[in-house]
Length: 195
Image (cartoon, rainbow, N blue to C red; front, top):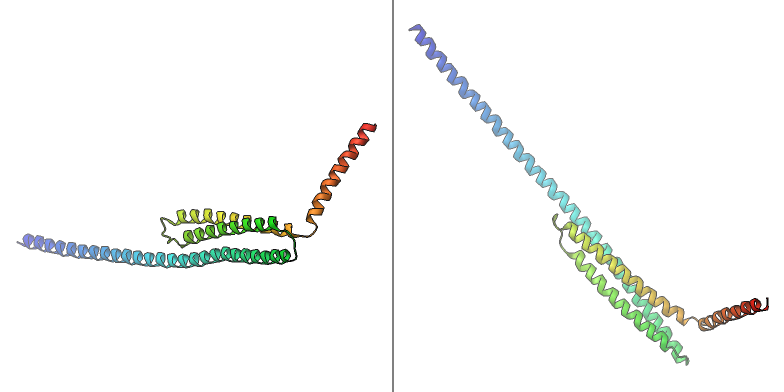
């Protein structure tokens, strides 16, 4: 009987120890799961904060890029208007400036092309970015930016051509240069034949 009492006491002790170990293990697992959830929520919060900051930076950079191109177009238009005023003033004094008017018209067409390219750039920059589409949008914006820059340069070059065609004495310099080269060529030919 003593043995039976001892064995039932040991069995009772083993059950109590096992149940407390299971409870401790479950509590530890529960605590680990709570920590994992807390870390996951903190991580997602940090990620969203970073994405918000990046989004705000991108928005300000987008606005800055678009604004620089818009200012360049505005300056080209002002310059074209000033050149047109000069042409009108010179025409009133009796000069024939039909070639300069044609050059100015071509320059204004290039300004319109540049303006359309800048609008396309603004549309590309206005596209919303998600992490998945960010690279594609940046690539498109870069392509549109290069296209707009090239068309602005072409418009500027066209206006510079108009301005240089308006400079007094340009035609005389061209003729003098071509006459000098003809004279130089004939002089060198004459010296070669006399030898």
